[in-house]
Length: 172
Image 1 (tube, rainbow, N blue to C red):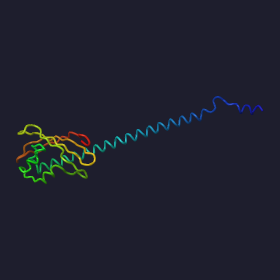
Image 2: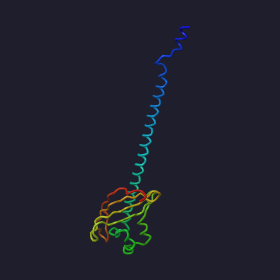
Image 3: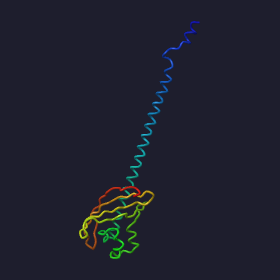
Image 4: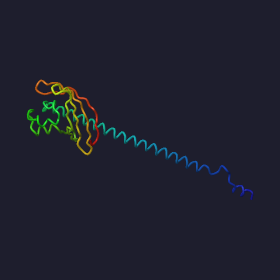
């Protein structure tokens, strides 16, 4: 009889292991999910950064392509604002079709257009210009480039250096 009473009596330190184990496992679950969220956030940030670098690279390639095309076919346009290109095309022996191809292009699968071209400095002494290109597509990224210009042997100017001014936004 004495034994049955002893077995029924509960000790004060019994029954704490299960709640402690549940609390510990919940803490581990919460910390692991926090680490997973942090890893996913970092992965998303890296993907955005990678995409931005790809866009910058594409626009830089487009700028070099555009500068080469202008040097070959439209060096007389380098000293003029883009708004004046249509009027000056005849003086530069450019057809309307040739002028249109000078204002847009394609790098890989991406199309681009000349969003703006502005010579900087006085009219007789244009020493630099700013070129702004815009990628086509659903998100229209823009980038600016500063061109250093020098007089060419023939009529017109030539580009001697290009400086990237960076991205100017999406959808602008």
